[in-house]
Amino acid sequence: MSEFNNVTVVKAANVYFDGKVTSRTVKFESGEAKTLGIMMPGDYEFGTEKKELMEILQGEVDVQVKGAEGFTRYEGGQSFEVPANSSFKINALGVVDYCCSYID
Amino acid sequence: MSEFNNVTVVKAANVYFDGKVTSRTVKFESGEAKTLGIMMPGDYEFGTEKKELMEILQGEVDVQVKGAEGFTRYEGGQSFEVPANSSFKINALGVVDYCCSYID
Image 1 (cartoon, chains in turn yellow, purple):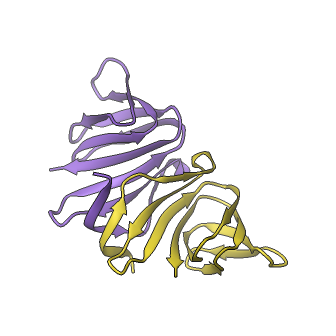
Image 2 (tube, each protein chain N blue to C red):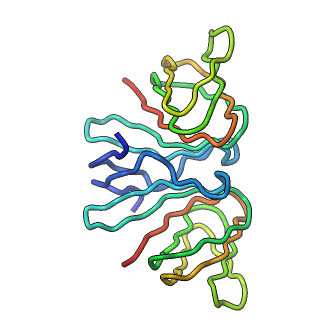
């Protein structure tokens, strides 16, 4: 699905890590929310509240979900899940375009 | 208007200047299009096809529209227009969140 139809977009960006990670929130009629984001190259760590499905649209990342032994590489077209109330380390190896779905 | 309702969002980001400027395209039922974007600090130049209304949501920029004598500063809450088939130089003094409307 290359477009999201009939959605609401929050105008203001979400800004993390001095703007090195930014995203826009997209809300669906179903109540579901996703963010469409960009990571500049760098190493980041995020906490989760809901379960997250992180889809890498473009670029490469090394990811370590809390409790995992090492990092796993994901690239454009691949995705990974992070449990609710957890955290993950993500190293962006270049500019990364991503879509994050928040799952109840 | 803090949200855009009943719109279509293109999933893939628009990426310029090695990711230092990125945006998402939002399409309205009226046929109008806007982009919601982020500029990392730096100096950029863009060409226009349609007339553009650039609204600075957050941050500060110095802007010189083609033909203008010097640069003018704009900050969050302010906006400027660029004619069709023209260009503008924009220096982002920090992380900039913007909304660009393309006007027929």
